[in-house]
Picture 1 (cartoon, rainbow, N blue to C red):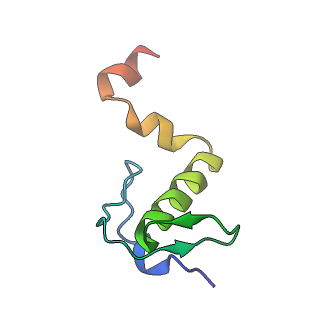
Picture 2: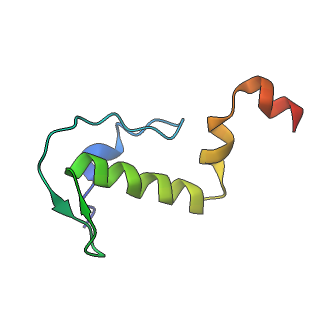
Length: 69
């Protein structure tokens, strides 16, 4: 089961997920506590993107910087 399914469609290609700062503590599968479910999912998605070939890091660079590499 994907605990973050409700947020997956909101995750942007740039590696961002816009979350509120509401205080509704939740723990991930490893037991780590997060401020709320959205922030937990944002971290999960970033890790998934990094494991998927580093596209997240490339996308964070401005286009002008990417062409210099």
